[in-house]
Image (cartoon, rainbow, N blue to C red; front, side, top):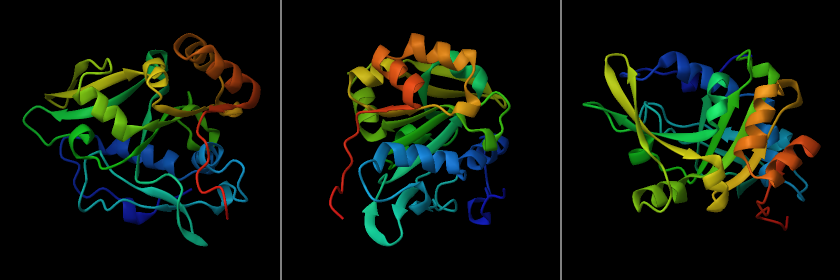
Length: 232
């Protein structure tokens, strides 16, 4: 599998080009489309095979906060996800089971918390082997715009945490998926059969509500998202 050259990073500043490229590799897989379809296309005539990605303009926004959009080509007004961001997190962080939103690097450019225009976030944890062709340990769809709004107004718990990276402290907000669920910000949670592991199941059982865990184990995904554009 190759990643489109239009998403090549020209200037990464102090962000990790390796992590960006790895995230891109997961974005351009059928696993991503399948989860998006499970969340947004149920009860419609469309499947994941109909989905196309409007890619972000990397010349304008090069360091996180990148926005794209999944849509249906033969019905172009059907913007499936709306403007969305995508990011993968490594499998070893799965036990934390939270959403992290980059605030920025001290003395550097602001992160996605300040500049992303996305209304939806696709946020996933990689499988143990970091192999895009083996699916995700956990894949989530989150109301990103409202999450940021609640963080700004301090209506949801999201500690600002530093992480040492390349000689500078990078800061990010961390929000537990359980808190996202309780604030009606968690649209969808899915797992891939190939990527299931004891760690992934423990995270689902201990860090998500029981209804989410039960549905993910039984059917591979949970969603309260009511499909929009019901009439075609």
